[in-house]
Length: 236
Image 1 (tube, rainbow, N blue to C red):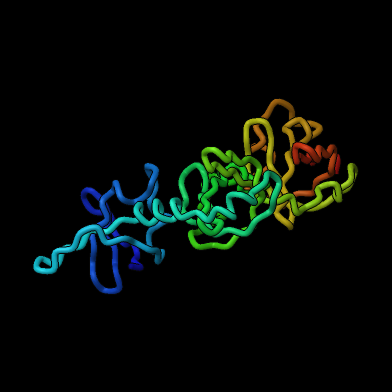
Image 2: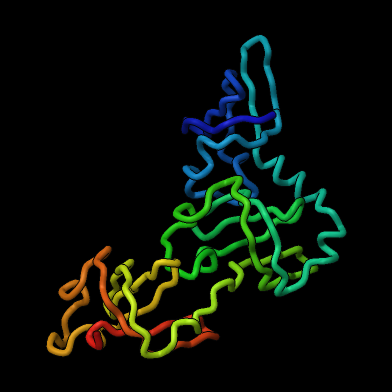
């Protein structure tokens, strides 16, 4: 049946099955332990009915059973054809603190949080949502364990930003060692604290710039293999 998790209760969650309320035990949410269930709440998804007492109006459902069943029914032709480096279309099936599980039509793969975007994100839910269609690239596949690891395809050629080029960007994140600057198309580069000011030495980046501030930057170095762009503010 299709339902929607809408509330947390003792021992689990309540699920709306189109007007009928069912109980989802905490152990039946997922195959793996889930720390944060908030990305699953309010999203229509399939459940298996485990128990039903018509007299008392009690229904117990499982999301885990659906996930286990789809894993067992993984089409052999998909498994046979998966190759490292291959770009595939998939659907976000589950979101955790450390990444997202993507369904390729019966085969699940892990898209780690560090591989979701070339820019820095703190939680997968900032970029993805359950049921979203995405394009991923296989970076590791373990045939014996059906382990598939994904990352976003390298659709953007960062070498189009030549050394010496100047552009505008927005400060997206601050660290002790510098600031990350995001360009209009979502690419980020790092301005090391030593490249921020000619006069302000040994100060924290927050004393020079702030998050969301627009800045002029110059490309100092490009590392295409590591997908890194080094930037400078003081050069502008």
